[in-house]
Image 1 (tube, rainbow, N blue to C red):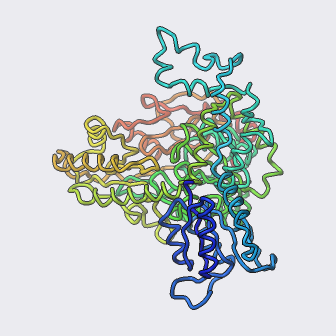
Image 2: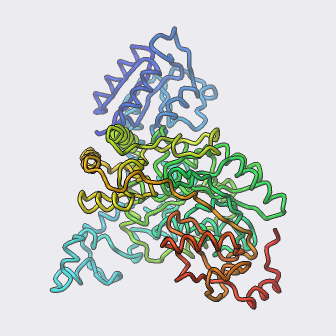
Length: 640
């Protein structure tokens, strides 16, 4: 067996006996006589999956007698490793006294001395955790080599494997990919849109819900972009309002258009030294929330991204509690932070912090295939809207989902439950080693949380996900574009993102020591060569030049509009989204008033050759006077 049981027991007789009997039955065991040593074992040994602990224990080796008991012990264990299963092993008889408050998996009375029962229950719990029911059923079905008289047309690869023209396609992906790419015509593999209660998709989603601390989990096979749209259209009726970071993913903006909702924008913090938009300051967030409610807006929800692209982590618990006080549902986009529940360095995840919903790009930071996503639900009112949620789920989902993608979600969950802590501990160590190595070079410096957050975030409890390593290249002598080009073309290293004077590298559970050292050696070589760009000048101050919304984005979006020179658009209304890259934040959304300040800003960017989505040769799409008059006639103007 590849997992271990940790026995924390003060009494030497019972500790020795439990260790001996479990070893005799084939389990790997570690043991100690105090909680402090137990916590150290949990931190250092990612193979521990089960903890056997007495109701009473000693805090440390030096404690006199038992000085900690019950729920306090359970909480201490789960603060370090939430995914482990805790079994109570005690002489305490009264079940009312030893209530575990849902924190423990099971109970054994010491004087029963029934180690066979203990073995069976421990192995059963771990066996269930390490299941991947959908993946296993898919493998079973594919291995049968049944003749396919249904979709897809490649028929397990038979249409291509002997082709004189495209057999290389079959050879590249291999037999198993084609054999596992099957359709909803196979009952054994269940239906993503209508899973049977006892089907393998339902079982896989139930296991994912337990792993990610949600009441319900839904698999999505067309990305977290779709997950966000499903939730927005479920929670918002036309005309209702939502708080959102202006710097959120574009799927949120499009989801608001689809839902017919009113956006209430939150302006992110700005770090001009490094060209980074950060989290929303708490004071600004609460004030915006209150202003919207005082103005009579039908504010129903809030969506935030945690952590940010650059790895900055909100103090979610306080923010969510404040939103709930005001009657808002909270959605957290965890595209870059799906692993947060599997290591205390990242706790709490959105579900643990009290969010009603979380969307998660399982493919971005874990081992799922691209576009594989999950929606996690903890909303206490979800049952009342579940049918409507499912309508929206089906509205955005394909009736022919990719079965390998569903399998990858199942396996990604299994991996994180069984070895996520160990893998993340390794990733964190590699990240620290990379930071130390890079900081030894001339011209390169890794940034810490205090470098990344702006003054307005001080005191907001912002932390840094240290697996996101941002390197300051100001003194390197290279521009960001030149350095990115050299790393890719001379050293085969692809960077995650850049600003004018930084580069960001993601350390994932798939990062190896070899990759870390290859990156260091490349940067070392470039450091010795020294670029010719001199010291990079600070970028011009980042701006989010915003203006009022005149109409709901949905109403303006469905107008035809007309393209006009941006210089002649003062006072007009945007009919499309206008997004400069960088930073990738919409300066204009449909229904927004175009001001002289916005025109000046966009014109300056255009003259500098900045890529601007939604602008063509200096022209942008605006509402015609007739369209504006029609929207006003229908009473669709937004009251400020």
